[in-house]
Length: 124
Image (cartoon, rainbow, N blue to C red):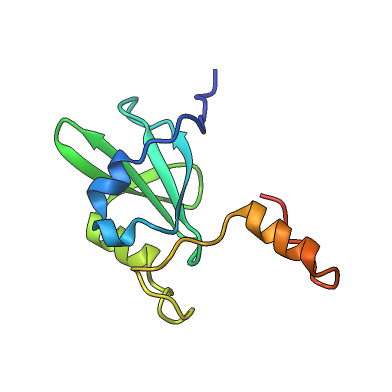
């Protein structure tokens, strides 16, 4: 049987441990992914602006970062390298790591309804 990917309940503990508090806004919890060694699941987080991922897990040995290998597995990685990769384009896109979170979908939909000429935001 293929291992299951779960999306709930979100687990923010690894991200909160990996990043300074001022950098936590703007991240989405994506899913729990089975780890190849059968140990603690990986938590996948995606940044709303850069669209890049952090794959983390907490073990008895501490916080671990993992990089998706582009096929179907993960390789151990250095946390600092993964954080830098996740934020690699943030400044070029006109934001900082200490950004405000994006507006919620309901606000976007209300704004679009108020202006009939504005296109609706894509569904999430």
